[in-house]
Every structure is written in structure tokens, then in C-alpha cells.
View: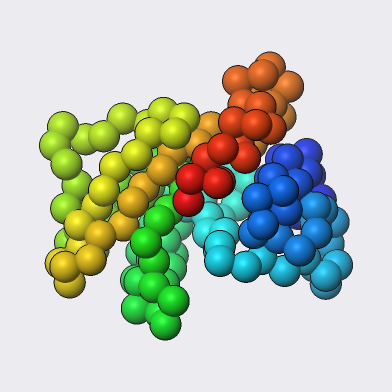
Length: 157
């Protein structure tokens, strides 16, 4: 995911600067990139036309996010923080959290860059959800998201 495109250039360079990646680029599978302490998961698993997934596409992919979060919570390392890249990811995490029985505050937390909310789980643990503007070329070329902004959110994790 993000490998070999402009969004990936931004994301992997920031992951490297903040200590989550062993190199600043990812150009292809098997290029040596290793991530430590972080995992990338998609809420929509295809690149839809116009980069705007429909409600049907989001619903079709939802079970994958449910499974990813369930397995990650149950893993040896656990899950304590999710960084949502963009509003679509933020909404997907909140919907998944509800499906998994996690507590989602009401009114529903609004997405924003560096917005945070705690999502208590039924097992007594909690997951912190942190928002970040998406690394899309539209956001990065307009200055809506800058490299320092992305690095700051990653450092907060």
C-alpha cells in the first residue's frame, strides 16, 4: 500500500524520519523496507475511480478491517493507537469499533488533523484514535498537510 507513488513517498519518508521505517522509500515489494512498531491497514482495499470509494466499496471491504483490528488487538504486541489517514479512514475505524463492541463517544467524534479520541474496548483496554490529513498529492501539494505536520502526528503515537 502506497508503494511507488507520491503518497507513499511522503508517508515512508516520514515513517523513516520518525523511527518507524528502516529506509525513507518504498518502491516495490522486496525493496528492503521494514516497519517497526507500526502496521499499515486499509479501510478500502482497491483504488476506486477518482479516489472516492462508494458506500458499497466501503461496505464490501469492512469485514477486512474488522478482522485486522480484531487480530491486532489479540496479538502479542496488542494495539493501543490507530492513526487514521483521512476522513474515510476515521469513519471506517469508528464504524468498525462499534461493530466490535468498542465504545464510541456520542456525539460521534469529528475527524481533524491531530484530533484524538479514546475508544474503550469490552476487555477493559482502550485504543486511541488519532486523525491525520491523508498523504494524497492534493493535500501535500496545496500545503494542507506539510512534512512537519505529518511527522508531529507520527511522533505523538
